[in-house]
Length: 252
Length: 358
Ligand SMILES: Nc1ncnc2c1ncn2[C@@H]1O[C@H](COP(=O)(O)OP(=O)(O)O)[C@@H](O)[C@H]1O
Ligand SMILES: [Mg+2]
Image (cartoon, rainbow over all chains, first blue to last red; front, top):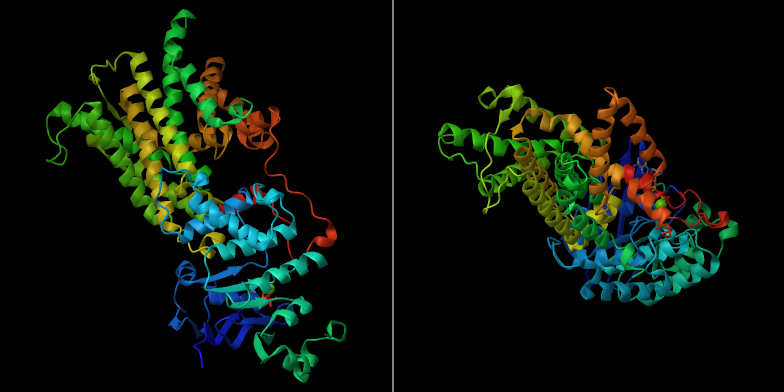
């Protein structure tokens, strides 16, 4: 059997009395799209934060490509190939969409102690940046707008483009469709389908249509604990999941 | 042409070219004192522009920038004192009164000082960073107050300024042109840095440390480099100031001087190329004019500054841009309410966010 790309083992995180991550173990295999679902406050974002090194877990280990990264800083993990998108977009608001992506390309291209050459006209940065923007389907007319002028849907697309531009060997996507309209959601689903197989992904998402159509495997998180993990069909049938999470109106 | 006049670099060149004429025009207008005023403006413009690199570009609110201004000044003053006494500094380094020696030493001193203080204070952020940079600057201030060998509270006088490359520094116009030339050089450097990959990292630091970590950038080394470069610029300005005043005292590094530099940057326009220059010109001339009118000029200056900061977002340059009808850059389109995701804030106000990152 192949080595998992990401292996989270017995992760625990407490915020005071609240156990946000409760003995969480999860694996993502090469080429796999693994969806992580669960009600609001289940600890999905907290889990991603720990995998990225933004939040320090109280216990447990995180292996990425066979290496223990539990104690590495976020930048060190990103350089090894982990990349995330944010549920609440974290973009450089004054900069244009293209500048945002170009900066991620630049960060991947090595150190930035370069004081002289104009980075705005550097084809080695602009080329890959435009390719990433094209890849997520942001219309070229929007590329030169400051992020602050973009719509919510465009910002979500840009989040994904920035995450892709850092050349990830694995993507952690935190609710890429949250707040999108129906057609925008469909477009994002297709973008993710295009990436599927090429980049392993851990996808946190509330849009059940998207999750069940995209995921190879689904894990269900409730109160920080993984209550079930399996194929979309298995999850659909799982009585514990139905009771705890998939309410009647969300039934698929 | 219509694009050219929107380019700050065009205005910078024009402004510097016009400023070079001041020593020619001033005597014709019967106000030779203007040259001295213009010299002070050029020098403060360098210092303010150096602060702008970290405050405006990087969003690092350093409240101790006068420390490096003073270090540069004291490098010149101390080297002169040893030159005059004939005793080498620390028994090793011979004194000097040659600007070609003292200026590089001053820049080095400012750079080393900033590197050390930066290395310690950049481990913190936010209000803590403001307080620590302020505390370090005040420590240096009191250090020089207590250094009786170099005049303590009273400071040091520099008696003569020797010619540099055949230029007579005692001639006010020559000293002015040197200061203006160095300002031009500094602005050119700032413009290059601002557009470089390094400058892009600084812009990222200002707008979102979290984003920078997420794209794999450890920001500390970049912040430290920027802090050090800024310290070197301030020290260069300090060295010029001491040559101009022929006097150095701890007042050069007093916290009020750090505050003045901040006011210049914010007044002129944070994060712009020309803003700090315009801010320096505005503050120095306002002080000069108001102090000629009344003893209580500070009571008038305060409200004026407050009005500009409150009502001209982006400082004088931001106000001018709006007058020139430049499309506003950071106008967020309001989202239709149904598009707002639950529990998520609408796209943030960039100014508020920048403040939060400071
Ligand atoms: N920094 C924090 N301090 C305290 N509690 C937190 C913090 N971050 C998250 N929590 C809590 O942890 C729980 C899980 O949050 P989160 O991971 O954001 O959930 P999800 O992303 O699944 O909606 C929530 O109850 C939330 O209030
Ligand atoms: Mg969440």
